[in-house]
Length: 223
Image (cartoon, rainbow, N blue to C red):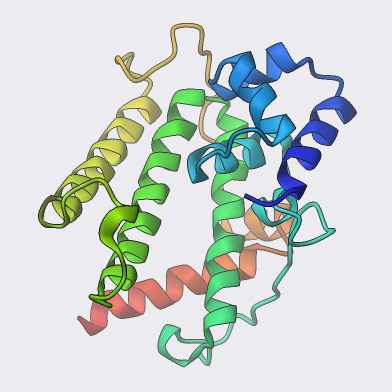
């Protein structure tokens, strides 16, 4: 973790007039652990970065000091059939995914369910974990000590967590009370959405989401 992260999360908390105790409770960690994060004594994981990004309404890139823009880099993707997954350069693909995730967390913020946000975060973290581990392990010379889970079990366990998180998310969205739900939660109903309303609310990110949907569904039919 770089030196910017502790400084930025402390600044955001103080800007919004939130006590360290309250922020820790909202983020699901102890005040002592948050204090360590803010002082740079301990490093956090991707899950905490995503939760903090959603909590303060800023991008992960901003939290990590990668951009001075609080909403991160914005990418306008033309809604034409020319943009295809296999034709785009990696940097464009990255921004398409990043911008689309911004909308997902924007919708989660409206629903206001910590439990649902947690399950969606687990699902996305597992997808990134799977992709990274596949690339990392493709080179036999890379030390395997970075991972604790046995390679033979990793994919099955991670995919299982993804499917479980997806199932819990659907149950939470149905309004059914489960062990996954916080006792004190009063989530809002999922918002009504159309392509027009998404374009109006997220003008900088909606084109990326529409491109991601279109490219993914092209791959569905191609396979």
